[in-house]
Amino acid sequence: MGRQKVSMTTTARDAAAILGQQVQFARQDRGWTVDELGERAGVSYPTIRKIEKGEPSVSWGNVLNVAALVGVPLFGTDDPSELARIRARGQERLTLLPQRVRERKLPDVDLDF
Image (tube, rainbow, N blue to C red; front, side, top):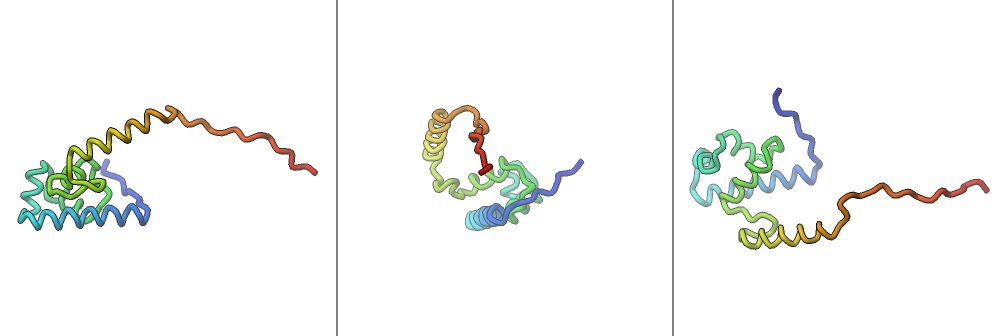
């Protein structure tokens, strides 16, 4: 069975297109062909083209690996140690939150007047 079509919101579609453009700009700035980037990333030519077009069917891992390879800043930084700090801060915040979110039970309100 092939991949299913992924439905994206307009915002997500725009973000994917922007990231794809940034990957393409960075690849070209380095003077790499699509084939060269694919070889470095361990993915095929069609996968690189899909990433550069912002197609949602490509795995997150491949998109992020390719973006990092060409030096596209992820989450506002291209410094791996800063990304690690951001990840650690997020994990600290998550440990402070409840493990589950329970549905709130609203009090019964008598609407009969």
